Image 1: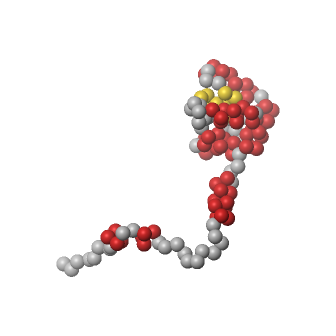
Image 2: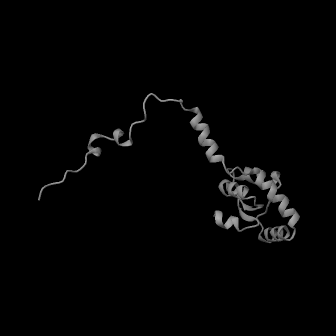
Image 3: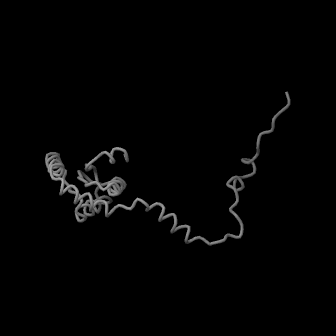
Length: 131
């Protein structure tokens, strides 16, 4: 998906949070065409209030809106900038760092290997037999 977004000037999608986040990181204006009631409704509001996209379920409105965007470079650039402001490409690393910062700074002993937690029967290595 990243390669397609890199080659795009905008995106038409449903209001899935992952796709919206990827589009923000890429600085893409977003034309939303649908959402899952309840869990994705807030994403529509996020895009509309952020000024970096529009919403319609009507194909003719979607086509007209995207066509207008592509013909108005200034407007497209403005929405692209607003979309970029919402993106945080380092979020995963920041979350991991926050988790690490919550951990004790020097554990008394390193964690045991995963195999040590298995029952003895599952850690046995088959022995070679003489032929």
